[in-house]
Every structure is written in structure tokens, then in C-alpha cells.
Length: 417
Length: 178
Image (cartoon, rainbow over all chains, first blue to last red; front, side, top):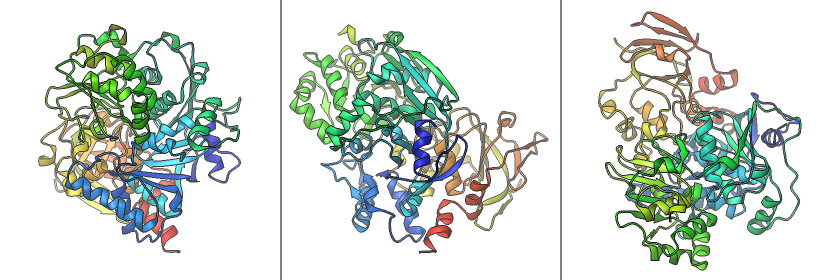
């Protein structure tokens, strides 16, 4: 079995499962946010459900329109607060909350071998610690809050084997943008993307989160990386766990195919509007002027991302015609960035620092684009109107490219700074 | 043509007919309903902005019973259930596509918006009158005078659909027995 099949089998009281089967699996964690939880709560209550299956396994994270952007979004968060209080489930208040997919691993809530579902498409992020983790809609979440179970069709797996040493300024974001560029936005639809190879073994945890986070942008059910020593060290640090984790795909596991990728040939990538699969080397876009640079999100708002952006921004000034928005994804990341002097670097360069929020990534608030405006962003989607007006344009990149572009006023390679 | 609809006892649709709205490949959930409208869960309010990013006159012109026909990977992107809710809220009776993104398809099954995978979807044109027989898996293009068979859902999913969606299914299996 593959690692994904093993986790699904273990949660379905089965010796083994194989791709294509429908099973009902037990879930270890059920997540919803301020946009998706209200619908789930409506469905839960409309069905006449009286109690949740296990309060400790449900977590509500108001991160999209918070701190609340308007009256309606304030009402949505009130629904979460009310439900959390009534059913004693986890709820993160503003001041403690962070972007869900950065926050939950930090809180030690996502562990290797877990089966996690969330009413947010980027729930696939937790594959980075070796969890089977996938996004769903609100009604699925409502049902799981009642039953603690979810139906799932066991996905076929594609193995992505990365070899070679990463080039300077190439991180997890570039590996995944390049990969999506190769297979397309439906290149892994309904499937599991398993990332392996020496490049992945040497890849820091924050980059692994970035890669698994964007598995959904290829249509995948989940992205996953087998836990190893780096995972172990990470878990000891954040979750205080010290036991050895033995969880990996069998040598004879079945894959639909294996895609070999020479990471040594990958340069910093930029995905042009309006699909994440429009990935090319950053130099291809060197004449594109930008109005805004956004560095943050569930994809690239972790401390490693902050350090890399600050490394470029140190002693520089943001171009006078550019707004640069820095969004540390959680309070802890914000605090760490402050301690390391990164926030000071950003402030001195003329960036604005946002509280943890999904905000601009989905055109919600805190940096919405007007007609004709262009942004470079470390986020995950560049669909039409994603960040604001239907005639605005989003280019996706890693934090160094977004920082360098903010300084130059146009898209550029970090070496240009 | 007057649209006709027949329903399963659970409330989900059994037969439908209506006029076609045609869309391309990779229609994503931001196209279907932009995030700035997600500060409500109200189906009517969401319907008023359905598809407006890519087809501004759609919400004003769509009629009860109309059918969406699209290309590959319909509904890709976010998990927002507001997307199928806004489509259903417009009165759309079914969505036919060459393929669907997985979270969108789950959401359709769960809320009772019929979603049909049809490899020949591109043969159907904007404005065609078509009818769908869900029980027998047949689509008739009345304008184009062509008939198509479509694969029915696996039995397990049909059970959810015929019961009237996931929460009714959960109600039957779990809540009532509490």
C-alpha cells in the first residue's frame, strides 16, 4: 500500500484498501473557518443534531475575513463563537488566531498518520507531516461533526520523485509551481500526490507545507510526504512528541505513474494570470510592472518565508509606486519575526505589516486590487478576480521573488537586488 | 419551452429539461461566486452574483430550470459550498460537464444539485433545449436532435442522492437512532 492507502485503511478498520474503493473512515480532526463553518453549523442544526461526536476533534478558525471586515462577517464569526461555546469545541479568538493551515500544525493538532478533513480546499497542507488530509465542503463537515466519519473514494497515487540540489532562491513554492506547470491544474484530479526523493529529504518543513498546500491546485485529493527525521525534529519542537514514526509507502505499493523531476534544473518560478499552471522562469516576466506585492498566506506565511523575504528586503526600499503587504501567518510567527528583527527590516523598507489573515489572497480585505492593477503574491491562486476586480492580475511566486519585485517595481529575479 | 421537473421522494430531481448556458474549461469557484460575497450563506443573495465575474449578465438572464453545460474540471479551486448553492439558487436544474473538480462534485451530491459527467459535453451548444432522465442516464438534445447516455453514480452515492442529500442520509443513519 501507499502511505495514503495505509492511513485510510487504518481509519476504516480494514487490513488494506485499494484505489477506487469507497470506504467510510474515522476522522481525527475536523476543521472549518469563518466562511465555511456557518454553513456547516446551519446544516448541523437543521438536521436536528444535538451533539458533536468529539469536541476535542473539532476546530473552528476564523481567519478569512478577520479581524472582521464588515457587519456580515462579524455575524459569521458570532455563529462560530456561539457554536464553539455550546459544544465546547476549539475556537481561536482574534489575538490568538492565525491562518488555519499554519496554525494547526503549530498547535500540534496535525500529526503523522492522522486522517484530517477541513472545509477549506488547502486542508491538504498537513500532508507535509505525513497526515492524510483533504478539503471538503461545509455539508461534509456538518456530517462529520455528527458522525466522526466521512465517505471517501480511495485515491490512486502519483509519485513525484525529485532529485538534485535546489538552486539559490528555489524553495518548495518553486518546486510545486513547476510541477503544476508540468501536469496542469487537473493533472492530479481526485488523486494523491506523493512527494519523494533526495530533494524532498533535504527540504525544510516550511517548504514541505508549501508543496502539500498547493496539491489542490493540480486537482489532487491530497499531497503527502512520508515523515522522516526532519518531521520528527519539527514535531518534538512544536508538539512535544518524541516517539519514532514509521510510516511510509511499501516498496511494492501501486502508483498510477512516477514523474521524475530534476530539481537542479528548476529556477525561481512565476505563474502568470489566470491559472497556477502558467508557471515559467521568473526572467520571462521581467517587464511586468506591479502595483502590489503580498507576502504571506497559508502557502508562504511561515517563519522561513519571512526570513527569506527579509533577506532580500534588508537595507532596501519598496518602490514608490508599490504597496508591499507582509502577513505573518500566526501570532507565533509574528512574534518570532519581531524577535529576529525581520519586522524592523520590513518596516524600514516601507512595507505594511498585517495581522494574521487570509485577507487579500481571496480578495476579501487588507489589500484588494482595483481595475487594471497587477500584484505579485506568494499566495496559491491567480484566477480571474481572485484578489479583487475582475480586470486585475495576480502573478504567483516565492517570497524572495515577491520581495525583490516590490523593491524593483516590476517582476524580477532576487539576484537583481 | 416550459421546464419540467420530477423528483425522488427525498426531494432530489429525477427528470429535468431546460435551456443551456455554455461555459468553458476550468471554471473555478471564484468565477462561480467571488469571495467578496461569501459574507453570507443566503442562497438568494449568492444567486444574485453567480458567474458575474466571467458573465456579468448571467444572474439577470438565467431562468428556473436552465442547465449549465461546461468543459473540463468544472468547479476547481476553493471548497466553498456557496458555489453550488449560488447555482442552485439561480434555479439551475443540473450541471453537465466533461469533468468536475472533486470538492465541487462532493458538494453537489451533498446539497442535491445534479452534476453529470458527459464526455460529449462540447457537442451541446448555448441555448439548446435539452432534457435529462436521471433514472435511465439519458440526455436528449432536443434542438440538436441527439441523444447521449451518461454513467450513473456508484450505488453508494445514489443512495445519498435518493435520500435527499448527505444530511438527510446522516439523519436516517445516525441522528434518528440516537
